[in-house]
Image (cartoon, rainbow, N blue to C red):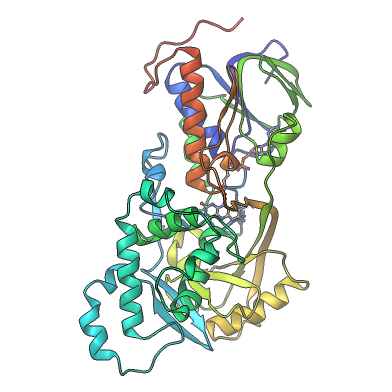
Length: 435
Ligand SMILES: Cc1cc2nc3c(=O)[nH]c(=O)nc-3n(C[C@H](O)[C@H](O)[C@H](O)COP(=O)(O)OP(=O)(O)OC[C@H]3O[C@@H](n4cnc5c(N)ncnc54)[C@H](O)[C@@H]3O)c2cc1C
C-alpha cells in the first residue's frame, strides 16, 4: 500500500525494462526506490499473455545473442535466449531460399565459383551469396565508433552504396533490415541500420525463452520486495513529488520518468515526441507445424501484409503446450482491413501450406510500438534534464530492447553521480531516510 506519507529517494514512473534496469542499479547502490506503474504488471511493451498454455507476446522481439546489454544488465543473469536457425529463410517468387548465414558463407568463394553455373535464386547466385557473407563478416569486425562516424542518410539510400547487387539488397538485406528495425520504408538512420546489421553478423537472432515478459519479470524479481507498485497512475510530477490518481501525492528527492515518449511529454511538456512505427503481431496455432523448423521467414516480395513470421514453438518450445504449434507473424505499418483473413492468405503462400484450419489465438496492434529514428538520429539523448529530474526509455537512445536497457543504465549513473553515491552491487551504504 502507498500512503500520502510515502517517500523514496528516487521515484521512477514506469516499470518497463528501462525503469526496471535503472531501479536495479539504484537499489544495488543503497538508494531507496519506488517504481510506480500504471498497468496491472511490470513490463510495459514487453508483455506476454497466457492463453490455454500458449505464451503470446504483444511484440515479436528480435533480439541478438551478440547484444552486450543483454549480458551486462544486472538482474538478467538468468535470461535464456532461444536462437533462430542461422541466417534466414527468404520467400520470393513462390519459393523459399535459405540465405544470410555468415558463418556458412566463410570460405564459400571457392564452392561458389564451382556452383556458379547452378540456377540462380532471385536474391543472387552462390557468388552473390559469398559476397554478401564477406560484406557481413567485414561489418561484424567494424568498430561501432567507425560506423557512427559514417555519413548519415536513410537506411534505404545507404543499402544501394554497399557494393552489392540490387538483387541481394532487395532479396535479403531490405526485408531483413525492415524486420530488425520494424521499419518497412527503411527511413531509419543508416548508422543505426548498420549497427543492427553488425549485430546480426556477429551473433544469432533470438528471443527470450518463455516470452518477452521474461526480461521485466527477471528484473522486477531482482529488486527489493515492494519496490514496484502496479496500478498506480501518475498524473503530475516534479522533482520533489508525484501526484497519483489512486494515492494522492508522494514525496521524493529525485524523479526518473521511464514511460514511453508520449506519456513522458504529457507529464513533462516540452519533451520531444518522435513519430512511431506501428506494429501488429498475430499468433496462430496449426494442426501441424509447417516444415521451416526454427527459421525466421522473411517476405522479400512484399506480396502481403506479413513482414516476417516463424514457427515459434520450434524456436522456443516453452511458448506452446507440448505437441501444439505456435506460429507468430509480424505486420509492419498500418494493418490491412480483415486482418486475420488477409494475413492467413499471405501465410499460406509464405509457408506453401493451406491455412484454412489455422486458429487465430491473439492479435495485438501497437500504434506507438517503435519510436522512429530518422537521420540525423542522436542515440544518446540526455537523460539528465537537471539535478533531480531525469528521463529514460527507448526514445532517449535507440528504439529497441538494448536501447531501453542502456538508457536506464545511463539515467541511474547520472542519478548516483548527483546524489554522490558510488554504484554498488547491493552492499552500498544506504542514504539517510528521506525527510
Ligand atoms: C510490437 C512491438 C515490436 C517490437 N519489436 C522489437 C524488436 O524486434 N527488437 C527490439 O529490440 N525492440 C522491439 N520493440 C521495442 C521494445 O519493446 C521497446 O523499445 C522497449 O520495450 C521499451 O521499453 P521502455 O521501458 O523504454 O518503455 P515501455 O515498455 O513502454 O515502459 C513504459 C512503462 O511506463 C508506464 N507508464 C506510462 N505512463 C505512466 C504513468 N502516467 N504512470 C505510471 N506508469 C506509466 C507504462 O504502463 C509502461 O509500463 C518492439 C515493440 C513493440 C511494441
